[in-house]
Length: 389
Ligand code: PHB
Image 1: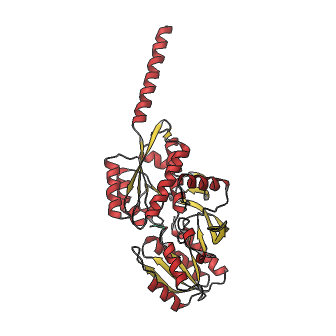
Image 2: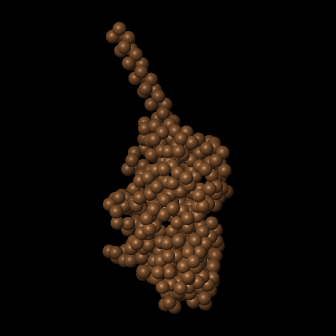
């Protein structure tokens, strides 16, 4: 009797061991598709660094299952993103796709995620409509409408009566233009001109010349992460600030990845955004310190925090599904997550799969010889105003 029990116990242990072994063999794969080279390379570099930091801090095994990160460089070309996503789904059998440096890359992948029921975590791209292109998108970055409205309100309150808007000519730029200009006009401001500059290899000079001629109180700018320094340099070089034109923008322009190299011309620029490396919470201080320790000469920007929180959302979904969730089960476990991020409190709205978060007004200031976006006001728990639902 006793012996039988022992044998049973032994075989149960063996079985448990075998299952665990099988599970360990069958890694949980995250396909991270990012622009690692080309114009948007800083986005890829920031997100990969943040994802690796998350894994270093939280371990690479969840519920007994090994987590594997497969990083692919899409060079920010949407056709390449699509091909890589297809290979990751079909050949590598990834459980989750993530990354998506720019809107066209996310859009090109939408049908693949839908057909294969693969959750796609958008860590960077920020056009409002992305999450409507597939029910498998979950976003941990932000949307341009979400951050642009606050800038419109701030401009009116700060005696800016006329603006010219200058945006990159694609999804997020059109969102920024629409939501900033609508709010600013509703409150009595005047938009003198709406300028759009090409996404690829933009030359800001002729546009800034137009702005000088228009003589608005302020120039409102959106360009994607990586392009801000060029705008800032040209703005100062052309003496726009001396001509009495203020520069206001979304925080994409005073990007923490580049801000310190922009020079004192950036001092005083006011922007609205969801993340600053200077955010004064204990959690953010720890995040920044550990990020900088692991990545010499790099300061985390808003892309990094999108990547870090995206990993959190994936890890917690894997935990909630005991390490073996299907695409649909993982997706369900991603919806509704609420947690403290280095940026502040965030919530994945289950109805829209978009992130609800605080939006800050910040001003570029010097601290210990370094330039930072210093937060001075906050609008709590902002939903994406681009969603009608
Ligand atoms: C986008 O393409 O959606 C995008 C890229 C960079 C940004 C914001 C939006 O800073």
